[in-house]
Image 1: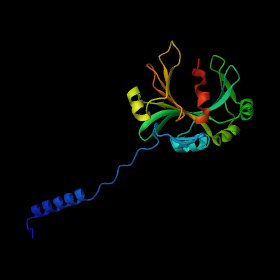
Image 2: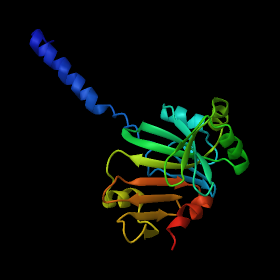
Image 3: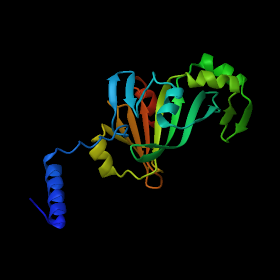
Image 4: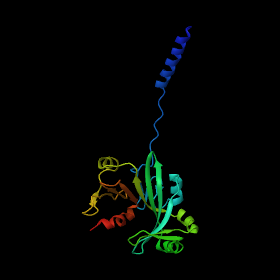
Amino acid sequence: MLKNPLLLAMGITLLALLIGFLIPGQPKEQAINLPWQIQVIDNNHSKIFGLTLNQSTLAQAQQQFNAQAEVSLFSDANGMKGVEAYFDEVTLSGLKAKFLLTMALSEAQLTPLYNHGARIASMGSGRHKITLAWQDIDLINKTPIASITYLPKTHLDAPLIVARFGQPAQKIKENSELPDEHWLYPDKGLDIILSEKHKEVLQYVSHDDFAKLIAPLKP
């Protein structure tokens, strides 16, 4: 038996270390809801950031992001309307980003929202921002999300994008004057915009809506 207190303490410490080495370590928790973790459920339902396009609602997004969105209706010079929900800062698995969600609303739903608008502000080039009436916010909260735009706080360079998302099916220059380039992943419903001057922009839509998303890029 060990009579020296110092030797006894050392013996206990060594025994504890030995037990620690022998017990298997707990597996590290896998990061989830990362921008490259896209689950294609079917042609019209892709799941990203814990949200399923054309199914998950704005209310569910606000719960998922633990943040409140700024919701506005926009109209352009051609009379096209759409409701967008903007999140200034969301942190998922340690990555900070801004989010812009477009809501799946028909023209029949958008017209009364426009007519109920509490305030209209001109944004130039025929574009207007309409503040929704309070009684219409409940409808928007229950509306499914049509698309997600992800604006990362950190820079995603081309090698990192290839490593995480793979090679794009196609690359398209936005126009000859700008260096911006669209990397297209139709199987994922994803358009990544790379710019030399600005941070990358990732746009997620359902497979059925992908052709509509990239239509303005075609000559």
